[in-house]
Structures are given as structure tokens and as C-alpha cells.
Amino acid sequence: MAMNFHQSAIKTRFAVRFVQAMKRLNKRRGVTTTDSYKRYRATRAAACASMASAVGPQRAWSRAVLSKTKRRRFQAISRKRRLINPRRNLGFGQEEDLRGLVPGGKGMEYCSLLSETAHYIRCLQAQIQVMTDILHHSSSLN
Image (cartoon, rainbow, N blue to C red):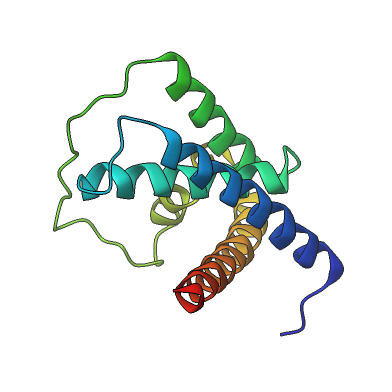
């Protein structure tokens, strides 16, 4: 699949925002390299927020992520881990499952949900590629 200009621009904006977020994370005192779970959560949140910021508010899923990020800044974050129900059907056979996977998907009509899902998947693929490139680049410096 050929990458178009729009996708390339999103990758570039994501990369810049993600590297900046990781620099801020490295300066923060509460997240050390020895506390791997906190580091994982902070990195994951930085990646999600960076991608949503790179896409902008044009997409419903990015608005949902940005809104969630803003709420977390002003609310105390619950430290309780959610238990995953092993009986939950994670297949794509049901519309409700898809709505639960796409940020902001619960309030969308079905056609919009499919469009947002396709865009979200393309952005996740771009995110993975950029993060892999960053990893390979940083490991080649050592």
C-alpha cells in the first residue's frame, strides 16, 4: 500500500510530538526506569496523545483521545487496574465490540464507525512504524 502525503504528514507530526513527550517523560521525577509498569503506562499515554494531536480534531476517535487526555490532567487517576473478563468476545462479529475498540466509537452511527475505524487502523500502523524506526535508530547509536 502506497503512503500518501497526508499519511506522511501525520507520521512526521506524530514523530515530533512523541519524541518531545518522551523527553518530558525522561525529565519527570515520578517515572523512573526501574518502575517498568509506570513507564509503560506513561509511554503508552504519550503515544496515544501524540497520535491524536498529530491527527487533530477532525476525527471523532482523535477528539475522544484528546478529551480523555485533558480529563486525566485535571482528575486524579485511579491506580486500580481493571480486570479483563476472559469470557469477553473480542471478535469483530459484533458491532458493540468494534465500538469498544475505537476511541469515541460508542456514540457513532455504524457508517461513521467504519470510516473512523479504518482511519484509526491506518494511524496505528503509522504509529507502530514510527516507533519501530525510533527504536532502530536509537539502538544503532549504542
